[in-house]
Image (cartoon, rainbow over all chains, first blue to last red; front, side, top):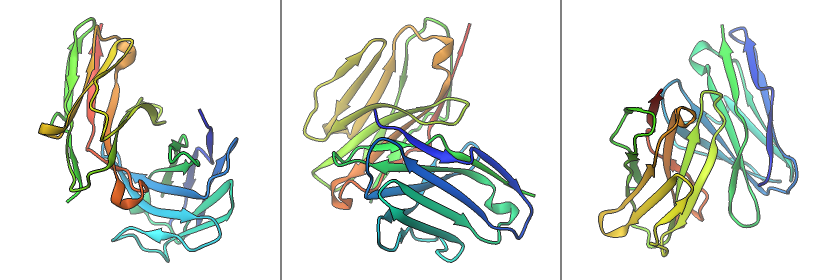
Amino acid sequence: GAVVSQHPSWVICKSGTSVKIECRSLDFQATTMFWYRQFPKQSLMLMATSNEGSKATYEQGVEKDKFLINHASLTLSTLTVTSAHPEDSSFYICSARDRNNEQFFGPGTRLTVL
Amino acid sequence: AQKVTQAQTEISVVEKEDVTLDCVYETRDTTYYLFWYKQPPSGELVFLIRRNSFDEQNEISGRYSWNFQKSTSSFNFTITASQVVDSAVYFCALSPGSSGYNKLIFGAGTRLAVHP
């Protein structure tokens, strides 16, 4: 199957700093990528849909100014958590959709904000 | 409303037991996909199966089998002769056709613990 990578796999940062997470489709082009958030022992919740070359579509309740998404190429989407606070600590997972509408998930990024 | 319910929060079995994980979904869409994913402690989601709403055939893959019943809006997952390596959180998910199959709506997950 197709491979999706995320970088970094884990990050620890101080409160108030910004953190950028990258999601790459390694062997296919993805016009659409998705960002999910998973709190400990909870399910995955879709945060936003990222479309190449256009603005992301955010789910209700997700602050677009706090979670900046950029999908500048067909193989890369980035999620920037701006002015991170401890409540933003979570597991962030991206997925990329191929031309057959299949979604392939990245390995996730564990963010800890101190 | 679009929703996935996994009523079993945690299941604990002894190795070699069979175990069924329940999944009930809600959607008004006539076309949709259903999925099962496995999430081991490492956190990475492992794709198990995708089923189209028009295909109600049950499927078997090794020790895994799936029972899709539209009449009861259920898509249950059975592991036969469970093994310790099956210990993980299992998620059922729905992708509605009305969303262009964009959205994946996940259930709360079932944590399976298989003891030796």
